[in-house]
Length: 200
Image 1 (cartoon, rainbow, N blue to C red):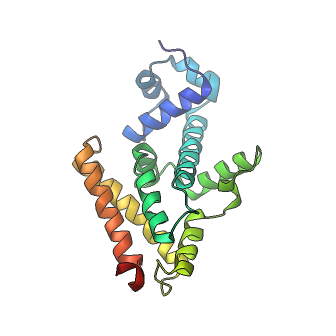
Image 2: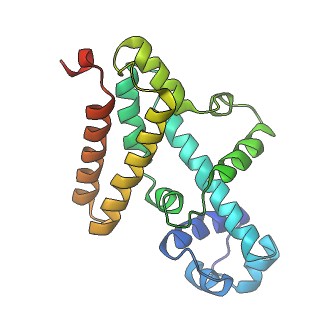
């Protein structure tokens, strides 16, 4: 049996829930390699463990967006970097874009509240960093001003989801297929949102 602390258990649970979202506590303990009593001691029940894994996924999503340097360069280029960073989180994207997602809007709100209880970060200061990037892109001329910001943000999120799910269907562990899916995702974002000036 492995000896893991709470944070490591949550990280492992996220990975195994992406492979089997309906996994029971017994199945999760077996997949992680710890005793069932270890999970119950740290989390009490399955709902608490799944919730902790979902919040971790939401935090990782937000961290990936900030890692993409959303405030640098043209807005459209920042969107492309965000797509690339999020594609490095296949487990998170699986739990976010599943038919019955574990990571939800409520999860993001809970994760943000947890973050604000500690040191405030730039990620916490933005309600939706993606919308901020799109607004900046419209101001700098790289993103079409005629596209509503909310629609554009939803389009980017859903296009990332579609690209990820396509990658899963052909083999998420295949780096070539993963790279192709990312390329198609970025191409769709660019084709739909780029201003006529940016396309020249």
